[in-house]
Length: 143
Length: 210
Image 1 (tube, each protein chain N blue to C red):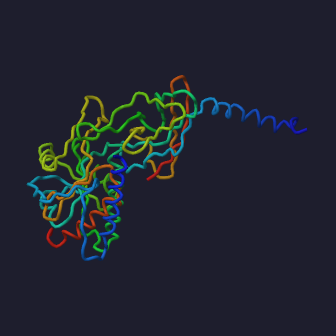
Image 2: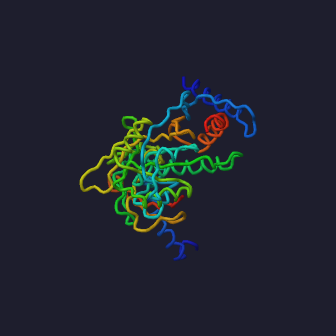
Image 3: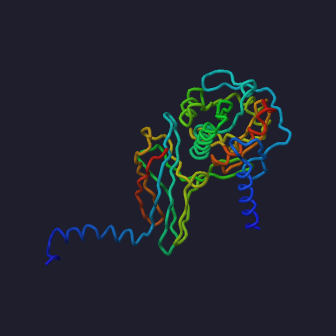
């Protein structure tokens, strides 16, 4: 009997919490990338599509990474004919909606990378939501 | 209303495409959202900057070439690298055209001279395109050229904060080979939009602009 196969049962037990967690939270990220930096440059930005497939709002409150001195949720804004940035302390994701982090809009401002980022590298950033949901995301460095 | 705007934009693009020919003898430019052309280009007055090789960059360096000018700062994580990457692609497009890019230069003007030294600027601009120039100057000189082009900028310097933000105009300014402010490209910018219009403009202005 297949169910008695300890390896098979072990596999199911191992996979169950992951499947449950993602179904329960329903918050995911796709197309996550970080802009490659010129050597010696202190700042770059991270972009992604944040998806909330749950039926309630989700609030992004912080982003952290050991690869940078600071990670801040930012938004590029227009002000008196100029463009600048403002800190976005929290971003609410509507139920069953996506939010685009893209050049010229929302972005993760990443300061003082611990190493020079080259296209193809991977950067790990953890997104934290209100209520304790934590989402680790792998960002691809792109030119 | 929206439909009319979209239709007008599509029509504009079609007309521009229709009149634009690499080897055509006649071309016309129609006003659109991407590029604003000045019927009477404005001659620029003297200014003095230092470029990323520590050479003087003054009004004379704008003569004999078409110059694309962009104001920003290297600690800028979003708009500046996005715009410089777009301009690098526009440069590539122009270089591939029949007339090439020998008479074209791209100049990144840092409004943040405290942090952007010549060395920093060199590393920064040449990363996007080996031919790009990075320049900066003191506040009086930056204010001088910014004022002539209608550029606004504001450094939000906060004591103790190393990564202070800077507010700045993000349009790209086109200065003709007679050092006259000739046109402006409004954001959001795309490389094709810039290079197509520039090639037509250069063809039209070529003989009289130099």
